[in-house]
Image (cartoon, rainbow over all chains, first blue to last red; front, side):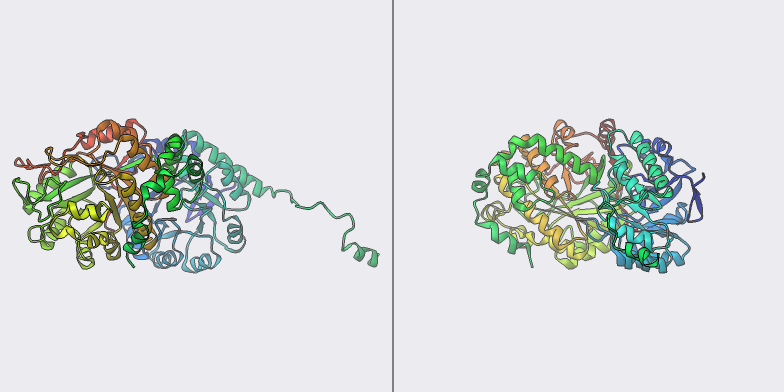
Length: 259
Length: 367
């Protein structure tokens, strides 16, 4: 059974998106791409030195990968917009992950600035992937602004604490007619599996892979977990109940009445 | 609102006595908290915390990797001018020290920039003495115009400015401010700065705040370790940094941990700060302010720096010189202080790479 995922005009066979930050060496990136089987990779433009005389992250990204430059470091919508334009001008394509963080302590995204940047960039023809707190109203604004997907956080960046915002993510999955890609906070493959099982369309994982003792193996573990969660979602998991079925049903009388 | 209001609440507390009264159990509780208060930080820098050093270090390493990954950011200082009107007793550029004073011309700044840029570094920290008539705003802005061509980020470590002046430099491409309080002990501060503009404790204390208000992306604070008892100064540095983080969430707050190095044998620090003390400071900061940058300069020895890269440090200077024009001018002779780790940028980067840490040459640019 083929379960292709189409997004931003691109058909993807893997629902795991990966990053390029935090690795002990950028030279690990090709192996991570291979072990994860991911088709999409995000890159922080602020870290890219296009005139580098030293090593440059871009030279390690295999050509088949879909680039998703991100605006990490942006503190206003204007900065995010300038980064996005630069990304396109330097040949990184028209996908852009909008990250606007105005709070360095908690690293939580600023929904208002993100929505403003999204609105402008979609008009300029970008495929915009906004990174947000899982907030229904912000997500609706982003749908109206023309985003191609919504990327809610599971927990604050770098915390590896899992799906702390699970209930809110479920609301987005239910209510928003765009792909939901869970980003940030996923610390273990089981977290990614849990998100996929609940119906998320994809997961973006960086820290948990990059900072593990064996990133290549961890990449594979995430790839399998995402696939397992997706299969479970497609197979429609059995219904679980907190309580046993009541032996004296409250609505049993209807049948008795009619019968 | 100024940090002074917070500072005054703690100023008369005998910090050292309070820290000596801490016991290993309270340290253990603090170390296992998710979010630490300033009291928890105090526990971690107390003598009682020595019992748990390895546990704290492991947690610091874990936090560092989660937030910053297996990376260390590299930068280098560039001394523009050593004219100075201050008489800071511990400083090699002190007005009374008989050294040749020099300020680079713009051509020399460009030459220096070219040499530094050829190492691959994209972040530069520019320094001057405190003589606004020499290293004037106009001069600094002209230097920034030159430096912008070579570096993606420019930070300043110069005399304290007012908010408007910081705004002005930001317009010329500056995005980071480093300013050390030297010591939070007001009496000692007064003694160490007998005359000169730096004598004004309050004006310096508020400088990081003015920089953040002006829109600096990065603000780095610190004290010169060894001037006073390190536990007191580090406690106030932490208090100051956490206050700044809270007041200016858009600004990335970092701390630097310069341990005093004698210049030509003139000033002997009154307080010792051992390697163990330095480690205790670094790991306590990592737990208290998980996102805060921690800088260690080349004042520290090669072997010490090699050993602390996994403890929570995020930035290292490399290929440093503390003389005006030290990278490219033949007449650069007078150093502000002695460099200990003399490795080049290339050697430093190679060391990091072989130890599974990625040297970051670029982390931001003026978008």
